[in-house]
Amino acid sequence: MRKEIDEMNFAERIKNERKKQGWSQDELAEKLYVSRQSISKWENGQNYPSIEIIITISDLFGLTIDELLRSDEHLKQKVIKDSRQLAHPKLKLLFDFIFLAGVTLLAIKLGLLLVNKLTGFEITFGGGFFWNFVPLILMIGAGIGSDDLKDKYKAE
Amino acid sequence: MRKEIDEMNFAERIKNERKKQGWSQDELAEKLYVSRQSISKWENGQNYPSIEIIITISDLFGLTIDELLRSDEHLKQKVIKDSRQLAHPKLKLLFDFIFLAGVTLLAIKLGLLLVNKLTGFEITFGGGFFWNFVPLILMIGAGIGSDDLKDKYKAE
DNA sequence: TATACCAGCAACCTTGGGTTGCGAAGTTAT
DNA sequence: ATAACTTCGCAACCCAAGGTTGCTGGTATA
Image (cartoon, rainbow over all chains, first blue to last red; front, side, top):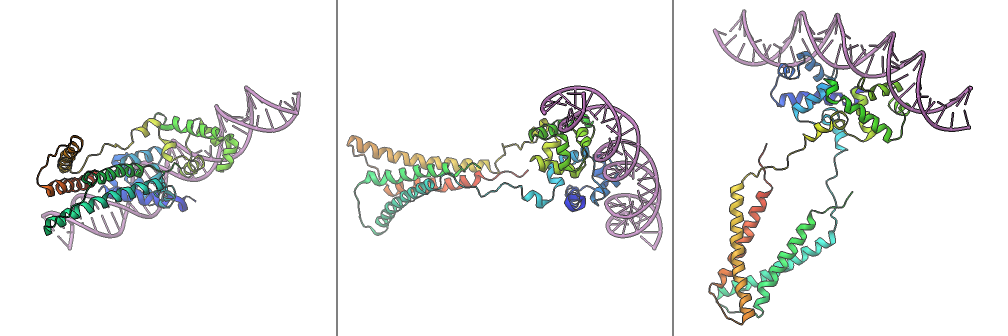
């Protein structure tokens, strides 16, 4: 029972963590005030340390006790699902389109200015006020809205 | 030692959780395949259950093992510090200034356009190409750079 | 009253966690 | 080559901690 569940995980994990820190069994034993052979036993799955020592170990390695004692497979099932759903997907899509419209208008305007510059043409278009303000308003307004909605997820 | 650290917490917590579920000691004992007196002992702080049973208990009550074994005070100290430090603070500051310069130029230009519109003045300034492109380039370029650096933190 | 339920104390037993002893294997220095 | 040192696993042993059984007291209900 014990072996099937988590002992292999605990043994491996404590061994890996010890090596990650570059400690020998002797050094870890000193830190935990136990004999070196106790460390050896834990790492070979012969027994578990006492509760108090488990808590100390989790502090020493910066792991939760669950991470120490449970199998990776078990922990995976407990991971919170990352693919959360946006609260207002359609509204965000609208803001994205408006932003694109602003970008398009701006691109048209700047493109014409560039053509005039490079070719010596003097293509003009009326509504200078429109061409200077509306693209910016669209881009800024929609950008703010879309960014705001990006961080809102459905409650679970 | 043991009593000072977490035994009171474990004993209280397991008792509270059992009652929260509306179970008697007998009922919990059946679920865990132990005697009723074992439950009594745990709840009165006389001893701890074995590791296997602790894991089963944490599943049964939907708590982490850390929550079972550690004091509330201890868990608080483990909260990850949110105020992480940026990897390149000075570079990000430079990008922020460049962005501000672009915004300033754009504001000047749009401000003049607005004044012309509202007062009927015809204040003009040369370099139409400059006034149309440079603010945008500054804003977009610096905005991208600053946003990129916003997510880079120093390794711990 | 009797019965059922609940939970704590105590004696007892077993087993699991920790210690000590020993030795093998690997590495380094002379 | 040998000696010294480091690292770690196996085994015997011990004891305390965890679990069981027995008993009892308190409370609620019929």
